[in-house]
Image (cartoon, rainbow, N blue to C red; front, side):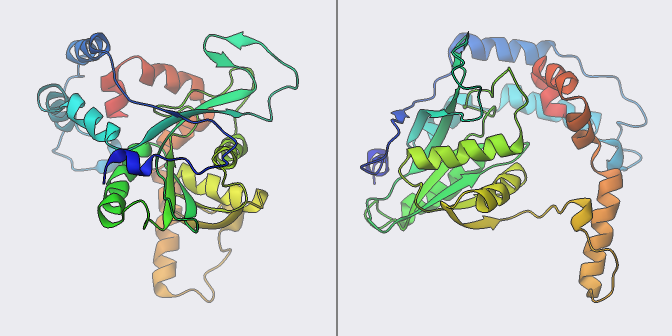
Length: 297
């Protein structure tokens, strides 16, 4: 069926999502490629070579060289852009209820008290369709869910689709606007924004939250905070240290192995997460300076 068949926001939705078509101007793509060409790759060292085979030291120089060359020579952005635009995409402005009451300060294109969100969606025309919001993680984006949307639109016509599939860019990710610059923006804030998105689409009375990684945390918060979130599905489980088993009594051998792997990963596999958590301003500035730096990270 055509893209427009799945683009009808259910009647009665209080929000006003606007259809959105992605098009990155050619000068911006040229600048991006130029930055990529000019970005130097560090010389070979023992740590970044293939010889030692220790993945805990990070990626290899050879991988980075090959990935950069593939990005420059083989990657066709316009083909990917056309694929993204083959799905209904929208932009919507939702209230940010945690913003200071009455504050009207204008900051470039961001109005305090609102968040500008992007989402892709397949809307069903069935009256009993179940709304599901699919939330990505980091490093990730709404793009991860497009193959799933592809499967759904091949299998179901709009009048047979059992779900309203809503796939947002989380605040500050990909095609959504950034969070406010006047305060810290927490997981609870992002969860509230995702809930508000579903409310604006007319699904506040009942929806399902699905997520992994960052989306997992948001789905948990939404299910515990908002009556409208009737169920959740997660493909990721990251208990806090105080939620971890205090002993191994009663655990199966398989569960003991998983617990041991988790404890090892907490000590050897979280360097990037610690950097994000303790120096977010620094790593954000570094990654924004170069596409090669972002690729390596």
